[in-house]
Length: 310
Ligand code: CP
Image (cartoon, rainbow, N blue to C red; front, top):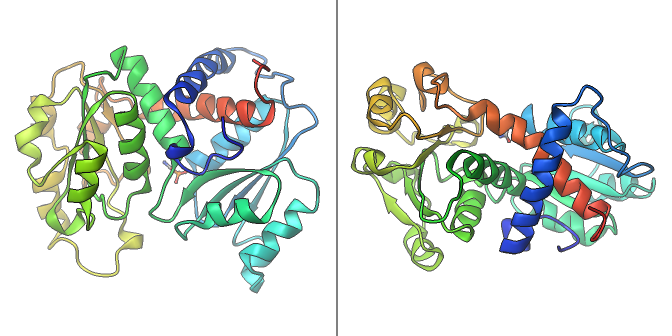
């Protein structure tokens, strides 16, 4: 495994399977009364989040604590970044305290790659701009593997605001690596530019028509409409978006009862996903959250405890 986890491209298929095997063991720890392993005792992990987060930040913190690492959180608002300190100065300052790993979320695509060039500590990308969110893709693929048995030959339909989605970019790479057939769906205004060349080389399909593919899905992944990243009008009204691209009650009825429904969260209920779909028996959304702790334990473990430490 490489030193840092900045992108799904840093991982081989064997790495992903190894991470899943360890995550399954970590998942068992989640069910124990005493959730503590000594693996990272004496190690220090800093979560540096310059963008808001509920799931990723808390699950990295829980993962570090359950592995006995010392974990602290730094956020943009509560740190000297709010006084104008540069990212480089903030990172060098924190690294000088002797930390072993930085988990970084930042609004700029490529920020984590840049951080990794400044310091010796391990860097884990917890979401950088519209670029990548590799641990989200790992936990999504892990969740789907547990539900479907294997991803080999399974048809995963990813729907939503693809232009602004780092989750989509990481998921396409991870799911296709594991043998899934991926179709991505978005309105023309939210389909990333250059997607045709990329889909041809990466081996996934694109369509503007959700109703054309939803009946053929083995799993459906709905993505959040990221209004905070939108500078203009990408669709006329929320109602029109829902009619064309939402997982509505009608579309839910067309899914097989065993077709998992995923969403990385946070959800816009009533916009990209109906409450009935989010809360359906086949919804995997809370399983994704639970898997997030196990996957992040696995990632921290392999990057900090090293090979042969399982
Ligand atoms: N899925 C995800 O990254 O959620 P948070 O923004 O809450 O971390």
